[in-house]
Image (tube, one colour):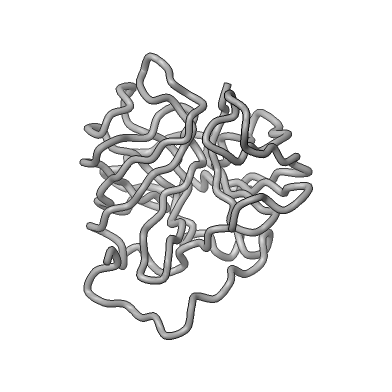
Length: 212
């Protein structure tokens, strides 16, 4: 069974959701298309730290509210076998209305299908507290996708904007929407634990659209 998903943001640091570690200990992280059919690499986890202000309760995203703080980091015993993804450290205004990609190992429908790495595209609609809410895409977050990457394609490469916190409803389709916790809202906490991210390539600037 796949408990949660995550993103390698430093050679030995994985970003995931706080509710994934609130009541359990994660002992390994799988890198690969699926942990059930061979292939890929399992790397041991030496420690885990959830956000100290994680609020284990939902709030009304349409009306706004306090921060959910649903982020956690896992420390690996050795570097992961894939390049880490830099976190997006600009404000959410840069990406509202843009498309983003969800990545996770969760269910493909309410009937099952967990354990396979999948992607879905969503449109980033609005911000509520530290949550960036998306919907109207070709898929949705479902059980097991929690902590997985929400990333955007920038002119210089991919950057992770948040960790999936939840999906609306049980259908796992693209009609209900989802919420991802913005890493840009928690950079102080994240960088204190994981260190600063690598610099962006020199010579790149913003144009009217990030997805080009």
